[in-house]
Length: 423
Image 1 (cartoon, rainbow, N blue to C red):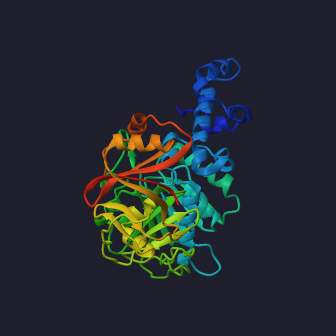
Image 2: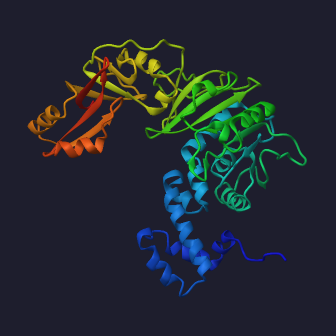
Image 3: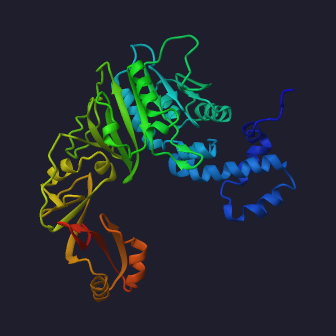
């Protein structure tokens, strides 16, 4: 016997469901139990439960998709966790566009495997690609299809297919020009760190992209560099200073036509064509890219007037040497990714601080110094120190209206405190 119960999405798309979602847009999750009890007096229990769950997910999704899109989309709990934020997905769609896929007169075809709720498919469709999005979960596919239709209504073509990506093969029609794979990196016990435990495994995704010839694979930013194949480029992406993800890029055709040099000049250079073996750090929203040049490790030198904290994408991409070269700086310790220099130079790849004090690690001495200077607002940064920032702030018993930044780190192997302010 066929189950004719409407899906949660179908219920939410009804007039009654839309009214509930509108009323719950700014609800306080802490008062949800009382709210649910009241709503169930006038609405079906299943609909109230679905609406409350969706309202919570939309509130969480705003950080990734912005209010305008998030409140027009639908989500699953896993979909919110896994989804790519709009800024990153748009950057990635731009890289596909730079490759120069397809033939004149027709939109290039991209297959998006493990599409989830459709975040990447939306941006690919908005960029003018003909997208086929594939996921194995029927409820997720239903949501993805709605999201793509709603947010990319003018797309050349956008299709969502419910299938196992590891066995999926188009029944008919031309092969895709490129492949994008976003393996699941979360399981029942949380985040998955072993790339071969991804679903599908990274090795499978690599071979799938090679078979098509052009494509990208979204991976966790903590991937060991030795796992990046020689015929792939690796790009680490940060947005607003926070590292969001890494992407492995492949272009066996060598047809990339990117206009940016990616040379790390700080002048707005884009990532350019896909280069096998290259390592890149891309900083959004500016879209600037620092590219590896095979430089040796920076020299270690004494702390100068300025300390530079490289962007997380620069550190993950192992491009601290390239950043230090731009700044004519060195490291404060061979194992610590802080750059020091005597001159202040503007750079998008690191945040600069003017150092006022260099002290051996001693909390009593630090407490006395902060009290003497009336420091009541203390930003604590650490690298190579076991001390937790909240614990340190509590011990300092801060008083005063002035602010400062303290770095708990090592200088030439010795535990050290560096005090200063943003330059």
